[in-house]
Length: 154
Ligand SMILES: [Cu+2]
Image (cartoon, rainbow, N blue to C red; front, top):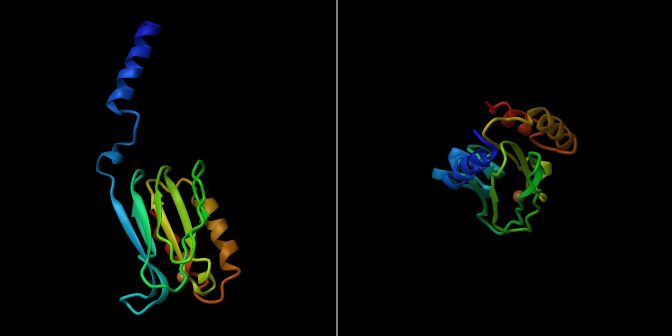
């Protein structure tokens, strides 16, 4: 193709959305509840603690009781802005990049209130494990929770 035709072809593909991840067409909204007591009896947890999603999906961290729960990112894939939710604040995170997102409740992290979101391929798994180990060193309860959740990554 001549250069001009290539440009037109690229413009046409852009117009068709072909450069966009196919998952965006049926992007899902996934709710993660921040609870003091989960239905299964677990105390001070994200429910669910592990989310497997597609790039383009949105995760909504929703406080279910006024216990000061927060959604704070510990690690995000390259190119993603970290976030710091305020106590009892609903936080919406669009998964714009594939990889592992680690999250914690600032108030209850030390008792194991942490979560893992996987979007697409776990391209930053090694970084996630390193960041998780650093957090676990400061935790008092459920020190292996990040490890268990990261073991669910496929
Ligand atoms: Cu909390």
